Amino acid sequence: QVQLVESGGGLVQAGGSLRLSCAASGRTFSSYIMGWFRQVPGKEREFVAAIRWSDSSTDYGDSVKGRFIISRTNAKNTVYLQMNSLKPEDTAVYYCAADYSSRIGLRRDQDYHYWGQGTQVTVSS
Image (cartoon, rainbow, N blue to C red; front, side, top):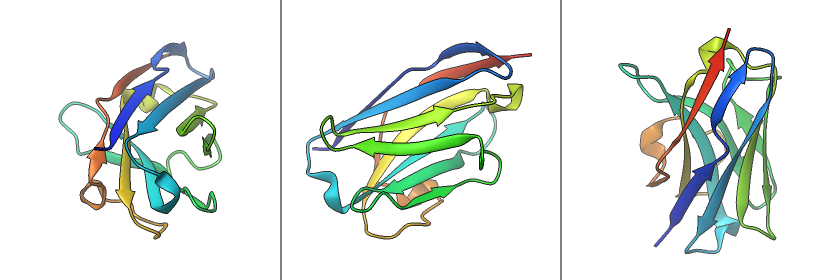
């Protein structure tokens, strides 16, 4: 069974940085797509970034492109989301997601089968 556990959320001032981690277990993830989504109460889940485990190809949502960086490490089976130049509008619960797929460009939450529990990120102005 795939398990995804996020960590690294917290409170940060606008302009600051945070790094989120997603520890993945239960599978060999070399054939998986790993994604980050975020959600604000009352709004739909928004695609943030994705990485194809096999070759580290990446994809970013327009609102975070140039500020956020997704990466992964084999040694720890962990996916990271480095968030820089944070804005108050980045405040949300951030979720890690995974799916057995070789396709990069999966941006809908229904494209992902496995989800973590989420971690809160709050950016103060």
